[in-house]
Amino acid sequence: GNSVTQMEGPVTLSEEAFLTINCTYTATGYPSLFWYVQYPGEGLQLLLKATKADDKGSNKGFEATYRKETTSFHLEKGSVQVSDSAVYFCALRDYGNNRLAFGKGNQVVVIP
Amino acid sequence: GAGVSQSPSNKVTEKGKDVELRCDPISGHTALYWYRQSLGQGLEFLIYFQGNSAPDKSGLPSDRFSAERTGGSVSTLTIQRTQQEDSAVYLCASSLGSSGGTESYTQYFGPGTRLTVL
Image (tube, rainbow over all chains, first blue to last red; front, side):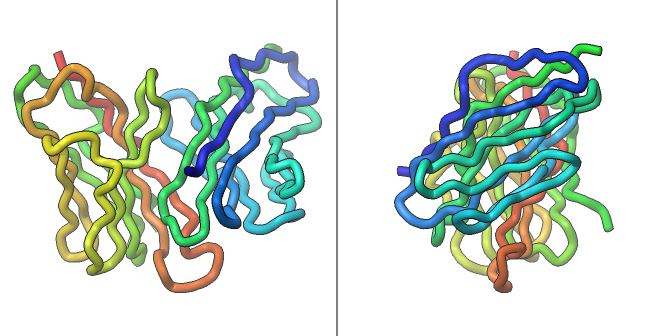
């Protein structure tokens, strides 16, 4: 079945540091890939997406590239801000299946 | 336009009681989804509605859980005889549906209903 794996544990870093959150997936078809962000006390917000291999999704300074050869969709941001503190979820939607499969999420804490 | 709305935002109930959670999708979205977010299980799919088609109920954890979608818009998730393990945040999402294009299945989430079963 479809599954998404995110790196274990919270991520704590200083303001203006480089952020990477790893995401790998297993899918039977050709999935679309998503990153969602959940700010404290709020619902899930779509951050970015990519629908086919080598596509790059980007938004608010965040980027992720759909790598079919490594089945990965790692999230990166060059210079984080305190306001980026949130939980980040990687998700996939497989072709022909309308549900999303989510990773466990990573809490990101940015310290001033 | 307005996003997905859910009510109530918080619900505290006693074990054994029934609860109803409501979701109002984005206007014009024909697809509606329910998910559950809990500490132990992460985000789990529950049920999916697309237009007038039979819903995909394959994620519902037990027969105590049911959902309806009236008039192709508002949806209600009902949990009967609640148990403590039902405590979670219940999230609703909607998407344009099978209208074609990659945007048709991008899901937009509501703020969720936090359910606490005592």
